[in-house]
Image 1 (cartoon, rainbow over the protein chains, first blue to last red):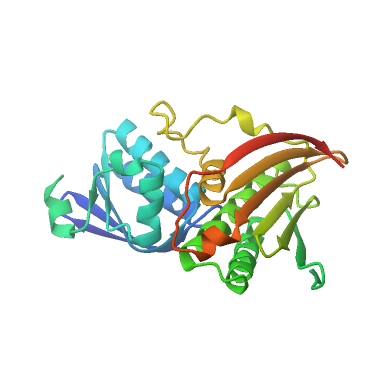
Image 2 (cartoon, chains in turn green, orange):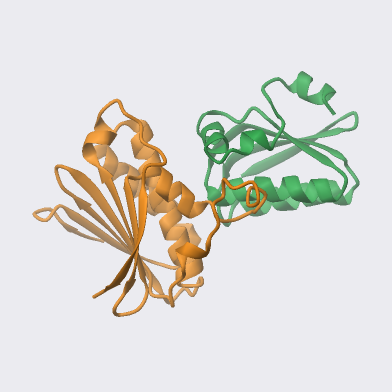
Length: 111
Length: 163
């Protein structure tokens, strides 16, 4: 998985591209979110638009990132989970846990 | 890989390495495609297989690379059966809490078996007599081929020892 951080005002948008699966994307996601928290970024938007696949480890890492962010006094929200990823979030009822946006501008002003 | 066309069985063994997951998952997709499963059913079965192999590597074989995971695809006109076997000390799937329970929703793990249960019609965990665990998943062909989409309908039985 590839990542890119865009800092837009107080919000860090983490663009994720590829798969978030066990032993690969999940580790990268953890490290990238940890880096943002360590640099005291308090508003994190995970852009899932180009995430093509996720397994239970990927879903679990999303939850772990959400928890760690909350514990650090930060907020983590999701942007554009598409197709399969959205289905898994729905199946696991995590759509009720995360704030999820389909429009980046709307997501940015929500922080 | 050994392929027995008369028995309609495909058997593959891998080392306990996550890098082989995509390969097994792709094989599961290909088997489903050959059997004429719809795309969503194909993706669901393949994810269930992936999660079973993850369990076998992580919780069964404890990522000891010398221990193998065997995946057997058994095709018949009415159903696809996938057995995933490890060589570990076994694990108790009954100890996992329901990931939909609000008390567990923030847990980072415990969703793999839930996906397996959600995406196939039947899931059975059995301890193997020679050691290790077998997860046997069954997907009825009619469901995958028709317009019906099945999630959440699996029964999980914890079977006895098998030889």
